[in-house]
Length: 188
Image (cartoon, rainbow, N blue to C red; front, side, top):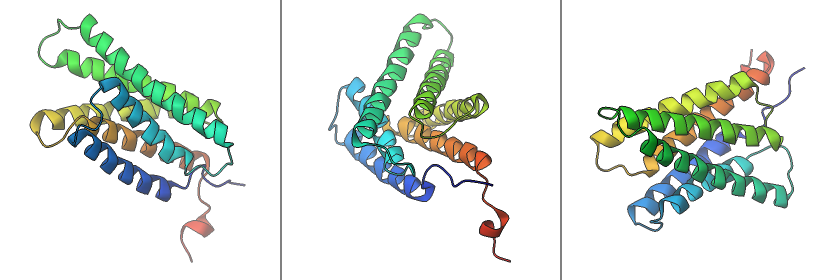
């Protein structure tokens, strides 16, 4: 017997698209200039897109707490990245940036995935968390590379690609744990 996925993923990805526009506009028009606040907003936007599409009922207090924790975890990942940049600042070229960015993306994804598990939104396995973290690291590398080669994108691009990698990994893990029955997948 299979159960349904934990989120309404179509709605979630539509909300993420809207959040992407909000993040781009917010950054482009300098609505939030402090980097810590900016990353807190990025974390809160993704968490809101998740919490608004979860199938299980959660109290309003629990939902708000989840969003607040996600915002704090986003700032934590930023601060770890900034600290790592100071500690490893002597590596040649962009190596330190990629190293620190990858480390921050992995730490942020693992911490966020753990909070999702602790809040009972999805029962992520360690393998699932590792897969999502690796996807987030790859997304951060792609975002950094494209930011270095295009000037019309802003720091929001890093957050948005990370969001889609995280949510895509979450969808993949959830689908593996709760496969769609053949009769529901394609009509005969």
